[in-house]
Image (cartoon, rainbow, N blue to C red):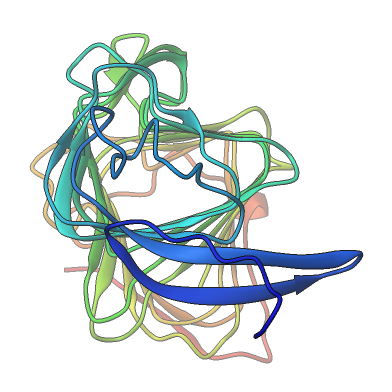
Length: 287
């Protein structure tokens, strides 16, 4: 370790050394206690946050400016909340960045033209986090995605509720790829609509064939291709809205797992758009 640059700061938890071509780069773990008003805040941090840093939230945070890009970092919220204060836009990524968002009790009340909470052109990994009450003027109430969004659970819940785009229900506008992996001890739930530009855009659910958890859609999937590989996909499981058209101009491919229609009816998908692989076992259930 001798001779390597060291970044030190009050609130530093530990130091991780990353070896990069052409030299050594030090990444660090920091405790974050406010949004922007101190050296240990999410914005205006001193020293500056760099790629590879890991941030641990110690308090609930309320934005006083747009969040924008923070680079390729990991944020572990430890069950805290970050609020856009009904005025500011949230996380942004460029096409070369990877952002990890873990364990947020709430990512809420962000506002933007597109993708109020997350506007992603790169890769975003989301785990055990709730997105609520975010609103965009055009597309992507919570998330606008033109890259890759990976949504997962680990003994917990990831959920989307009360997010809107152009005044209508919308969790995600997908112009890339959305991958959902729910472990058997948790679930991923969408109370809001997911929409895409066309059916070449995919929503992949437990497609590794090994992840056995549950994904719940309580609102429409529009202009998308949904691929179910394992676990359970529940439609309208705890929704009282009987008028929802769960697949609108969308395709559903089942290679494994269970399709559970619960309180839902699939009345807007043609047989040509519902396919399965005969070699695999799957179940359709209706209660």
